[in-house]
Image (cartoon, rainbow, N blue to C red):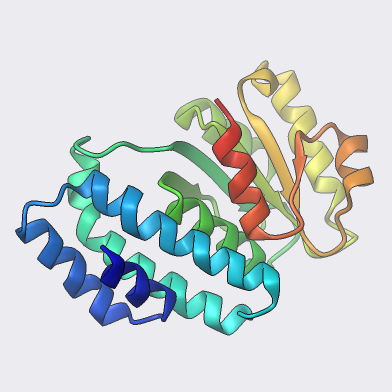
Length: 206
């Protein structure tokens, strides 16, 4: 397990994939591999990122290693043999095509054991509503990088309210122009300054 954690933190994608398969062959459960290796590894990567020891390139490389390991586990996870932290729907709001921040949040959530439904970029409010109704996620993550599109977050929250779904999901918002004050004004549940803090909040949602 420690070897797998190290491989992920160091960004060895091929080594991570191989090690996950070796652990499965040895009889280690998918749940244990997730809970005792992949999730702690991404927690460590998040700590290194927040402390300034890792930058975006290192985080993306580590995330790739985690995803390669997770690829081996996904068939087992799909069979319901491993515990999931819950579902999370994420997307960049309508009119905004930026997705790096949104992708990092998705990677962090996936690394924390969430089933992530990524709607992509330039997503209309109605599409978020449909996804929340269909998937019943614990959290909904909204991203925007432009000041001209950030008001789209308010539209999504309003649409959820009109659809009678607002109380069913916690809404997280983030992106370069977003502030705690703005998040409070539009009625979001959480403002995340980075992907690690967003993941940490999502873990607290029951």
